[in-house]
Image 1 (cartoon, rainbow, N blue to C red):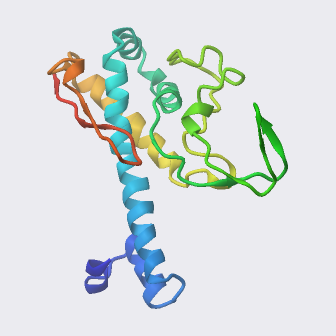
Image 2: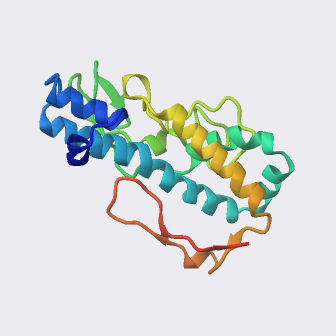
Image 3: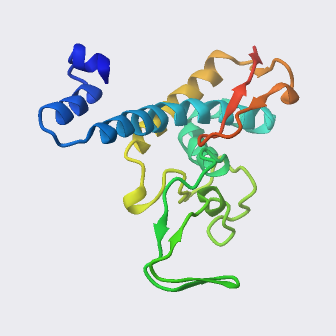
Length: 205
């Protein structure tokens, strides 16, 4: 933000700074929140964490890698299935508010009560997905909620899909002998963060 104030540019961050400084349409704290949580965490960290998580999942299932190598046209469907199966976020992020009383097991959520749903649990709902704990790269339809739903649907979902599809396809094509460099147990994971992913995943090819 400070750099864009010193060196204005015709990009998204520049437009946000302009909206704050010239149009006064954002407060300073809103500008920082959008730049940090929205653009950096939501727009960069999610994809850069999801991709190695996808690679980890595929490397632990050689049959899936073989299936994709034989038919790269499956990559878009594979990305959707991996988005469903691999939790990207470790936190509920936003509260949802019940619009009416709802019974969940032995608990009644009253109208107006906030709820912090676990989206990755919804993506394993057996009432929605057949064999929800199985990775099926041909699953269709695949109404996962990895990007949220309704007014909470991620505005960058289509860009994230495209990035993940192109990156996964490039990895499969460029590294035909892709494998863990240190074995599965050599992968180290991030803890205490919102976006789930490996902190270290060494590969060889």
